[in-house]
Image (cartoon, rainbow, N blue to C red; front, top):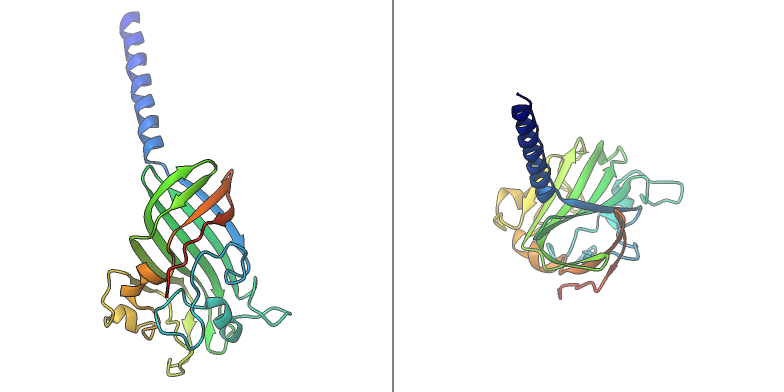
Length: 219
């Protein structure tokens, strides 16, 4: 009886160890940093579209656009009030998921409510000392979630953010419904090649402390 009990305990311990090992293998390491202004952040790693530029080239200029459409602080900008950013990097054994997440708050005239406006990049990486060397993305998605709502009919050329939820990816058609919802300011076929071209993310603990060797795609 004692021998059977010992054997049973041994089997259970082995099973528990196997579960722990499997969980560890499947787990992702996550790193993050926050900033009130992505466009002026010292380590901004994306091409940023500007008013009047060709549609779909680079990331939408949420910060500059937000100074006209989002809740403003005492300094007259949306920095840290109508728009705050969190950048997260998740890595598993072979691939990365990089997100630039803007929490946006409508000013109440053209837009109201709060939403998360997210650019997601996925691709392969190489590990280095206290850093991750991210390659060019093979998949890019843009999502808006929350209760962020456009109050206007969208006829104004600058009211190009739709009401949440809305999503467009690099796999959608350029002339499809997903892109047209953003008034074709986001062009699916250009998402992989004009926004983010790879960079080295330096980390300390679970914090992103800098971004180096940024490859800005030629646009």
